[in-house]
Length: 86
Image (cartoon, rainbow, N blue to C red; front, side, top):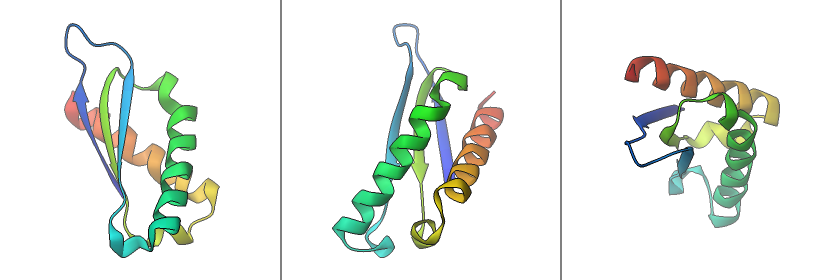
């Protein structure tokens, strides 16, 4: 799991998220379920993040994680991406 961060420009406000869920994760139904889970996590943590754009990338193991475990990994990846970008 990884996340990339691009700080907001002068005319941008808020957090924008994109998700990379490759085909090796599973069929379309599985990938869409994974994206829905990622969206729920992003909505939960967006208020505590720096303004900018985020790309959250997952691998095939993400679908086997329960929501709490996935949330922990995503939060850690987002925190690391923000600290690297500073």
